[in-house]
Image (cartoon, rainbow over all chains, first blue to last red; front, side, top):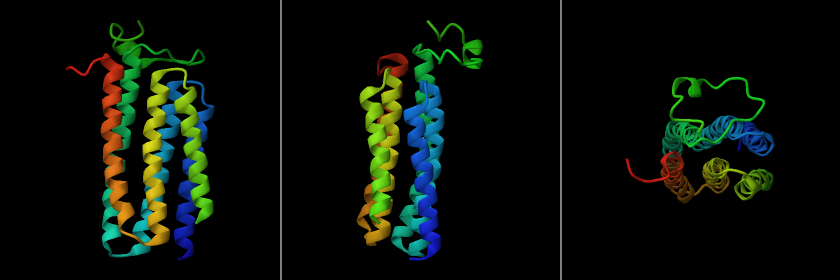
Amino acid sequence: MSNLIIILVSIGLFFNFAGCTGLIRFPDIYNRLQASTKCVTLGTVLILLAVAIHFGWNSISIKAILCIVFVLLTAPTAAHAISRGSHRAGFPLWEGSVMDKYHDDFPQKSGE
Amino acid sequence: MIIFLIVLLVCSFFCLYRVGAGPTPPDRTVAIDILGILMVDFCAVLSLFTGKDLYMNVAISWALLAFIGTIALAKYLEGRTFDE
């Protein structure tokens, strides 16, 4: 196992740990969503890229590349769906938030 | 190998804390989504260090099912029903 694989997996695990720490530490649903989803998506893509590089041209490598494409397509979609649903259901922002553009665009459907 | 799995286990316990202690339902939904992506990481690390084909099959199907479950929970949060 080469040093490149170890470095890629270590960077990916660092991003995963940063995302989960943001899930613990941030004060608001939207802050937690924004912190955790991006970091965990990047960490997962790096770990799967390490798998794809390590096994070369193999069935495991093709499945890893397929899984990279799938995670890159589905994780932002799920995060956007959660954010839109929670804002339309009227869950409030953190009291230190500066602006709320979605509430300005659709005032009748949010913030009951 | 074992240090990578320990880091992933600590991340999973952070997500489980947010599932248990989240003040609102969207916090729990986000934590379940992140936990589903972390399971893909577990399968990728196990496949990297054991060289077996089985774990990547589990990773692909787990990512698909976690996405469908998260979309269903977000739809439930938005309208409180499964209609529309």
